[in-house]
Length: 433
Ligand code: URA
Ligand code: CA
Image (tube, rainbow, N blue to C red; front, side):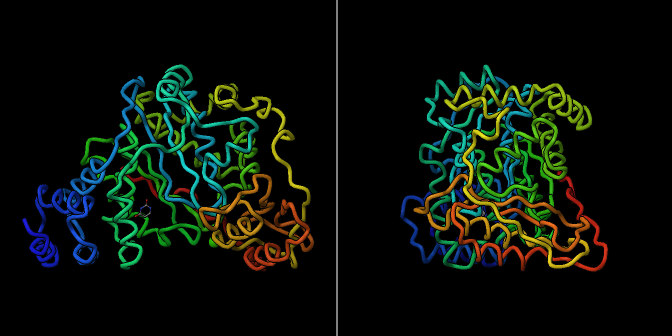
């Protein structure tokens, strides 16, 4: 087989066979196929797309390019959740204990990463003593007993994806539905998921700016999941404004605890119930989404979801009193209110800009080397559609410096007030199965 023939075939819109796709991915991972040929191939995929069979084969070739996590020591159907990313997205912290309380095993591998705030591990490290260093045996035992454990990323997962992503980044081929979908799904499958729930976000705080693109990506990922024997469902959710109120690590832990108690923000709670229902159904613990939702609501009302959180924190070395006493979380030295300059209705909260304000305060990493300040961030006091009077607080800044001018200005410019009543955006745009 010669790479040049496969580039030509894809360029001309002809479907590649499974062995041809394997040849491309294995050859590129090993270094036998040079970057210039792979670049041409990626550009051909960008323009000619891939069939469902090609996408599934590409995904499994990437999965098999490196280590795969073996979760067979864990009982039950392991359901993983993936979000395409947004601002102030605290769902993982809520969903873990919530679905675990309904009997679905949550064997989560998480990262730190770059962004407006830290990754799930950074957030949990706001809890004094919490750690993610579990041996594979401890990890499996904890999931079997408590239904919930979280470890840091380890092993050499999907090296093909790492190499391909770096090349896509410099060849203008990141933004291709089959390439994004296979990249995300390969990582979930390599991490051992039997079933996958996807939260594809849309809006200016999201990777997919329009609902149409979000739907195409959701359908592509559901197609790959089902085509590789992993039951997969997706929802498309709004990220035109941040989710919930808190943006910042300790602040989001507090918000997650509130949500597990049933007193969290309405949008975050609803999203967790919708995603959680899908996880409970895929985990085989309920027949219908309605039945699953009832179970989740009961887990919150009875306090069982919060109790799972408490035990999870304790088993991973953290201070479980955090669940009842938020003052034990890292606290910022200063707070400042962002005041409304006029009366009216909140018309827009530009999610990515508001996220940038949190990063400016030190809540997230701009580069891999940046240090995170777990205590800082911001709390929105209003959401789109809310009435506001001049002088009222739109948001509170939590900082460890008195110099918050840049963050303050960013927030003032990106929380937009209108003279006219604006409806709150629809949170769940679609469910894709
Ligand atoms: N996120 C991923 O993991 N892969 C992509 O290709 C794009 C976004
Ligand atoms: Ca917006």
